Image (cartoon, rainbow, N blue to C red):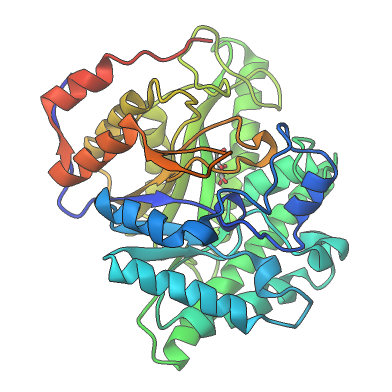
Length: 417
Ligand code: BGC
């Protein structure tokens, strides 16, 4: 146990996604999935946490906790309810939200795509459809022209690898396919979307005299380890999985002949995967969260280092990190250990966005997996700051972690596999 001092230019924030909090997700693929009965506890993304109805309260809570950086996203189905027909009403609501955040001293990182598609796009094949890239770029073009005077940081696409693997390799996200060629194709198409959006956003900001933007994408990276270190097949599976799940995407999305296509390295980190084949797995007798994901703080630095080796000049943003801890029993320890690892890494990590702020609609898990710093009551919609939320606020206020805080965090125990 020891105190931690955060580097001078390091800032803590919170991350969310439109479908997971806003309510009123429109005619989107996740509403369709909900109607097909695919959400574990039957929770409805059209309600989510009704953030749209609690925007003032959520923003005030964030400000009270000292949060100065907020990552949130657009809901494409609301922005473009019919192909080619954009909603000025929706843009007005997003503008008001950004203005409110600014009034509370909170800087915005805007996600343009986070797992959710309008059904008109989904029906044409989603990112496998023949006009997918142009359709995605038209949405980006509209959003950035309308919002670029207020926003200067963007995530083009959230976790293309998770979107592709969970949607097209059988992990249960819409559209629920089991096709390796499709999964690979989706990752490739999203790469083109990202690179072209990167150029487009810069061009629009320049053309309209908006501030120089920072643009990146958010990769979900895992620390990979062979299940049995001496087993050749496990080792080979480890290399193949890591390459296909993340290394290849990082290279093809950000490098390339006119690259780099990134102004920051966006990392979503949650867990370590132990490979004994080409699927996910967990080592025996390791600390795990409520979803059985290994808690492995050293992994956040391992992943940062890999990104840093790719583009050493860029700052690293932890665009997501957090844990499913339904009883808020070990989140303080999780925070302490991950932030300590980052602070002591010597790597240029300048932002940390905790996933998530208020417990949210956790995709297939509905509200059965709680990641929030703030508790959400699904009946009354009441928000209550958790002990871990208070701990987070204190870390922000002190710009570090005192010995007393560290001791408090270390008294918490992780569940074990
Ligand atoms: C996603 C979030 C999700 C979180 C926790 C990430 O893969 O970007 O939307 O809620 O993990 O599962």
